[in-house]
Length: 129
Image 1: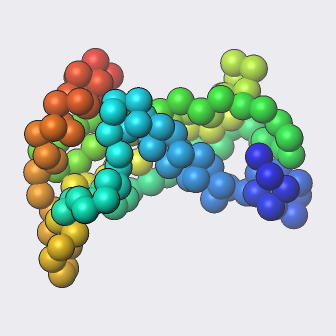
Image 2: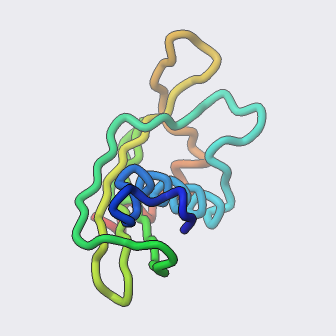
């Protein structure tokens, strides 16, 4: 982590955890052979809900692990759970829901997740429930 991620108490600012979760989400997509924002795509995945529960503080230069998994998938949404741990102890647990939308219309319109994306994540969503 970087010094700018800290609050005035010297612990990682609460908002930074959302960045960690989003970085893990992007890594999950890459591991599936996908990009969450490929050039020229007509769909996007804005966040419609996100939350964290904080269990222990992280401090400057602490090392930690971030794991994210899909816990639900509907026709138009993906739901994730993210856990940050340090030496096997829970630091924070987060959730995030994204919805698939067409990006070439205003206002944005929710649409079905493209089959090539849904196929990559269907097994993960099924195995997590």
